[in-house]
Image (cartoon, rainbow, N blue to C red; front, top):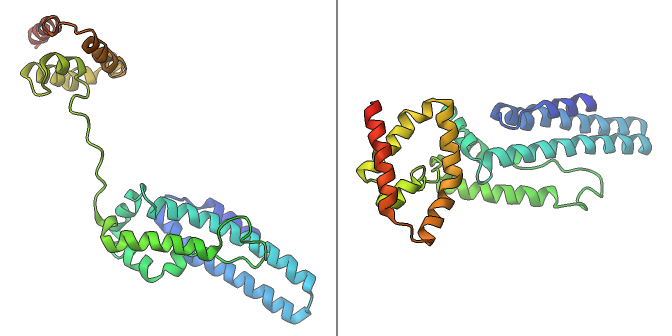
Length: 234
């Protein structure tokens, strides 16, 4: 039975909340039943050797459980990864309340019976407190309900040279070049390759041109030729 439980734990997908729930309910219950069977067996045959062997086996199972629980907590509830719990909220609006009310399931590792279980790292009780404090702060502040805000793009992204020359991201010629990039060049393999090379080298080129005080009027002249060609193609 212990082997079956471990195999079930290893098959769980750490990005699936239903698997997270399955771990803290069904698998947790199976491990509890296994420990109870060990206690009942000891009461029957009084063999300390058998009890110790089975206890060590159960501790191994609990260790696998705790490792998987840590994966779920990190993915769903830890800083930087909350988009998954927010996705879950769209289909299960009460899930945060459930985690809060049943934190003993979702946030508490199983305590191993071995005396050496806490010697190689924080104890299960300490880990549970850290996880619970983190969850409570986010839960009480409404953090999990807020959409994740992506880092805004630099205003001159993709238009480094043109923006440098015209000194404005919104200059009409910069807008023409930007639209041509998005609407034409981005639709072809060759165009995408050019865009990638441009992203890679143009920031350094702009810094160099600025350092040597390269005349912006020359860059404008070249860009206006490009814009004329674009207009003819249209």
